[in-house]
Length: 261
Image (cartoon, rainbow, N blue to C red; front, top):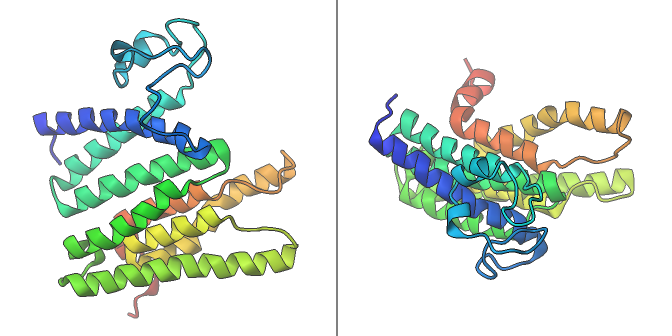
C-alpha cells in the first residue's frame, strides 16, 4: 500500500474524468452530444464558466447551486467526481501502475456510470456497454494476466467465452421470464452489461456474477414490491456491484466454493 505524489495525481485526474463522466451520465440517455453545447445549468441554461467547473472544488464553493439562478445542482455531480477519484486512487494504492490498475480503473469507471444512469433513468445506454465489450476483448489480449492466462489467444478465448455466456445466459433468463410473467422481465441494457462484464471477467467469474447479482438485488426488490408497490427495480447497478466484486475477489470465491478438494 502506498500513497505519494503519483497517488495524488491519480486522485486529481480521476476527479477530472469524473467531471466528464457526469456529462456522459446526463446526456447519453437523452441522446445528446457530449461535445456541444458546452456545460450549462439545466435550469436556466446559463453556460458554466471554467472557474465554476473545477471538479469537487467548484461544487463546494458554490454550495451546490448555479451561480446565476441559484437553482440546486444535483449532488450526484459531486458524488461521481469523488467516487471516480477514489476509484483511481484505490487501484494505484493497492495495485500500483499495473495491468490490474489499468483494466480495473476502466471497468470500475464504466460500472459507476452505468449504476448512476440506471438508477436515474432505468436505462443503460449502449454507448457505455458496446464500446466496453470491445475494450474488454482488446485489453484481455494486451494484458492476458487479467484473464489468469499467459498467452493472448487463451485470454481472448476466455474473454470471448465470458462475453457469450454473460449475454446468452441473461438473454435466455429474460426469455423464460417473459413467458412466465407475460411481460418483459429483463431489459436489453442488462443483457449487454452482463455480456460486457463477461468480456472483462471471463467464463468462471461471469457465472458468479449471474448467481450473486440477484441475491444482492433481493432486499431492494422486496422493499419496492411490498412497501413501494413497484414491480421492477433497476437491476444494472446490482450486476455492476457483483461484477466489481468478482473482478477483485472472483478467483478466491470460485476456489472456495467450487474447487474440488
